[in-house]
Image 1 (cartoon, helix red, strand yellow):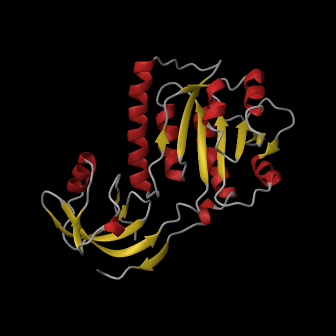
Image 2: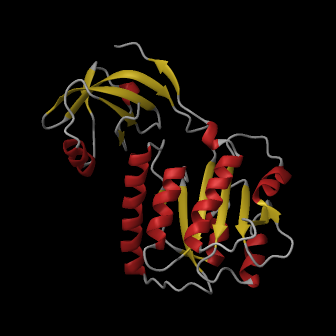
Length: 268
């Protein structure tokens, strides 16, 4: 059964000393809980500050939401592939669409970037407002889809800065429709033969108009495990590619096969 999901930023439930305790929810999340009209006896899913999953039973809900732990759902946070989407800034509501649906699929981090062919231009003030909106969309989508964490949408950077922003990933996949000799995304992942789990993969998707050859060369030189990849014979819109590409990576790395393993926790 799918339960309403709530995320805690500082509270670690394993450290609670009482059988029943109040959840330290942000004000917006507390409002969301009131909208759900939670009543004693109902169950919710709680992801605490240690990324541990708990199924909790509502004990009371007046000023605070008081719960008790029913079950500890062993977090698969460490086993789930970490996919980062570096998305070229796209105009209109396209970024909203990409962030919402990619979050539902399990993308962990978003890095918007500007490039030569970007139609959307943001100054510092507009960028900050956009990022606030995008993070709110990511949080809402994570709660709705039951993700193990809320992905972070970072401030937009230049393409030249993108290399350092994704330097901590294991593999860098660059989607480029103009390349004459590109591998399928599946073959590109297999060619690196990385055995360690979890694997962190960054996927780069260009804006409307795509990436220039100069920009692609810059990205290819920014990471030792970089590869150009194809998403098939069709030329996809940026808002389509920004959803399809990370979905394929998560699928190939087995992310859609994972489920929570449930371990009962003895009541205190």
